[in-house]
Amino acid sequence: MFTQDIKTDPYWWEASPRPKMRDLPLPAKVDVLVIGSGYTGLNAALVTARAGRSTLVLEKGVVGEGCSTRNGGQISTSVKPSFEQLSRRHGDKTAYAVLRDGHAALKWIENFTRDENIDCGFRVCGRFHAAHSPKAFEALRRDAEHKVPGLEVETEIVPRSEQHREIGTDGYHGGVILHRHAVLDPGRYHAGLLERVLKAGATVADHCPADRIERSEFGYIVHTPRGRVVARDVVVGTNGYTGQVTSWLRRRVIPIGSYVIATEPMPRETMAQVIPQDRIVSDTRKVVYYYRLSPDGTRMVFGGRVSHGETDPMVSGPLLHAEMARLFPQLRNARISHSWVGFVGYTFDTLAHSGSHDGMYYAMGYCGSGVSMASYLGMRSGQKVLGLAEGYTGFDKTEFQTRPLYYGNPWFLAPSVYYYRWRDSRN
Image (cartoon, rainbow, N blue to C red; front, side, top):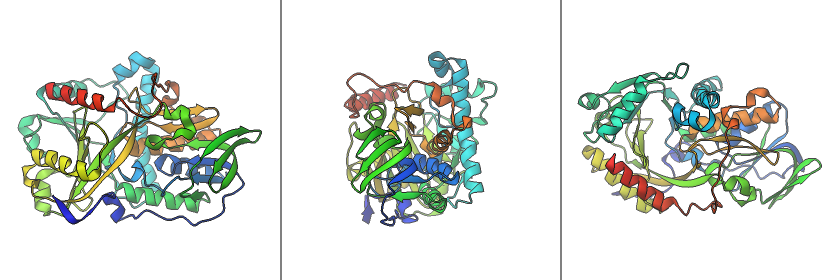
């Protein structure tokens, strides 16, 4: 099942080992202090540093070790609720703005990686979104055929009789191709982003958590194990790793483990049978599986949720392998070289949120679609700090909800996963 040198670090760290920052003294005072060194925090820091604002990024552990380098590298329009669902909650105008921002995020990261010349394997490959049941396929067909003007997505319906041109399994009931969805290497993207943040003049401090934040006449005093820092503005970009120091946010973001495996290298011919068009793949289950080929086309990178509660990657690995082999019997003998977990930030309305609380800016809750959206809303947060009107998005117009008795520990996760698995089996 496992290779002899099985690793519980992400496969992406092979090409992009986690960096060690220079152990420099913290500045006593900065214009902008960013908490979190993932895509959100670094994109915010890049904007403010390039605008001439002194910028400090605090990371409680190793820089970029959270879900920014633990995801599958899949890039979509990043918004889960439909226009109809969002309209019922927030009205047509806000629904349209939110979905337009989802489209903008996808285009923005394409332009950003190109303009910054970040070597991260970005390419528009398209997504095959597979139907796990006939009922799910009909829902995909209806959605593809009824598009809101101005929110059109280039799609192609693939019936089950034709799905082998997209995917080498009989385990689905057709699907839809979303032609503009994209892919990148998340580790290399983060490394390139960090390099540009440092070049812009920002300071990044690792193993340096924000332990306490208090208001002051100058803005904020942020206490750390290495001393205190006075900051005029604070940006919080901690997503699924949000802690008690920002308790209001912690009550609104739900950390959920997403588990991923990478197989040992396999013959390219075998992998081409599995995903012939080298697209990214996801399915319509509520407890979703998502997967892709590695950038060199020799490995399967397969992710999803395989337990009701959080578990060890050495436990989740064989469970993911079993699901992968169920879909693709041709991979049953492929051993696992990497098995890891990352915590995505979910929200109670399955929608990302961006705004400010107690004067501090935040963006988080990407609900498993954070590669482009975390980057985009991080960038927009940096613009807000600069006082730019374009920093405000449709996501600022929605209430960031919590629930009674929720304080950051998702005690309801196991029964929720059990319920959604039952629903998936019936639909």
